[in-house]
Image (cartoon, rainbow, N blue to C red; front, side):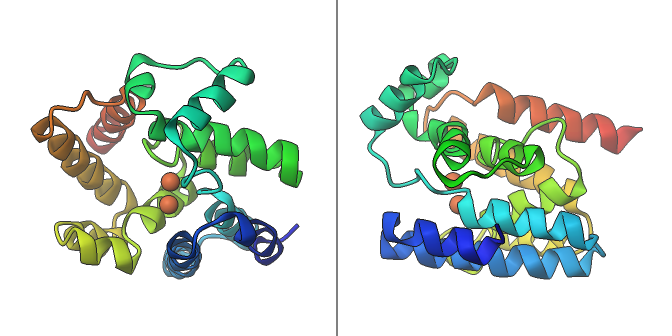
Length: 194
Ligand SMILES: [Fe+2]
Ligand SMILES: [Fe+2]
């Protein structure tokens, strides 16, 4: 299945604003892939992840928790407090079950699209960044402009900047950090030093 077909199949399940966001992520992922010379196979996987990543973004928190529990997904206390954080991991499971998305790279990228993951390769970080800095999100949170600009030259540095901004914002709001976001950040810093 290509990303356009997945987008078309999922569209009826998404509210209008979310459909516009998904289209923005697809467009920016494509642009960043071309800018960074990502090969065609990896670019297609990025676009598939972009099309499917927010399948459950509009689900109710209690529903997300129930769907995660029904699948035996391990739920971190931070996720239990903010079930929205589960929309990637449960969304990836449903993309596989209901839409026959089988590609391991795509499912991994979707599963961790909120926090990033220490194993992300450059294409996965570019998809991650396309989700974080598509134009509508930058408009709502202008601090992201710096991340959007850096994404065009240094994807890992941009991802680190995004995670720092988001962890700072969460701390200011009294939210506990997601453990995987911290691990991603540590991995990006480690790689930056080596
Ligand atoms: Fe999302
Ligand atoms: Fe998204």
